[in-house]
Image (cartoon, one colour):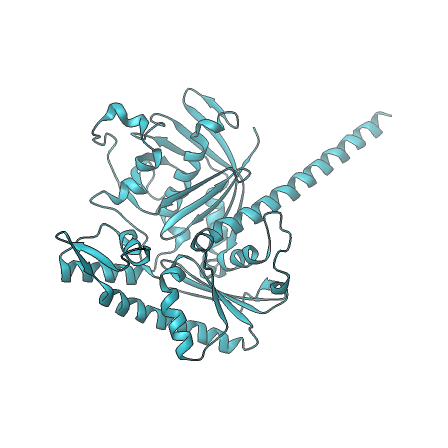
Length: 397
């Protein structure tokens, strides 16, 4: 069976995954919760009519995990649990079980899908799934060399996801094997996405030879990539332990203290501050209440810190022409950063007005890079196969 492409961005807020020849994608909130095998379900008879993403309940077996064979609720189901865990501040993406649990869950969902029956061997409800994976880590972790250990954890082992009480997939096990794993620095991926299309043809000629900064604001970290001569300058690039998660947590806590309203997770806060109508409003005992004061104060402070980082990196790279803000965090902070920049008669900065593009940027970039790797690899294998064939026929003569 051939290897299927998976391009996966395990973001601190959600996991974004693209599979195959762009024919399917998944978006799952990055929240997990430990659970028991026999979770209680109301209306078990109707279970299979529901969306698997709403009831993702799995056991994960993998030598790469510190806590092997554990049972989890994942994504939307975990947000409704009493003990949801989101990635902690200061944690390294490459060293957390949660990163791997999310990654394996997304791949298993793709492998078990009805439409993929012809792609993998399936015997007695066990799917044997082979993937070629393109993913990434924050610049800081790549600079520390953590990508090497992360890649070797994934390669060379079989990782099994067993669907427990999950709609449509109950009882299915997926054995995941990686034929190849490429781990890219997140800042470089953003650059690839800016200048190239899915076939790696250059789309933004005017950007190619410019000096650019890309400030990628995530949940737990911020990367500022320095691009010159068409590549990331590793020495100048900076990674900071500063994302929007802490601010979202503070907003959630203040809303609880001031209004007595308990929000389930950081995702709920993001929804309140980014929704199109009634932005920065919550319902308190049935009446619409503004939380503008709390949000403005906390996000305003965070925007100042992010702006300070931009200023410091720009000073060290004075010939920079433009800085692009990308990532989920930049959507949350966009208005605050624009205001600061105007007040300071500031820099040439730009945002992606298309929020979807900003959120999916990394996954799209990994897709472009891993597809290109796959194409070149197949070509080399064909050439080597042809060569051997010619040598054999030569020897026979």
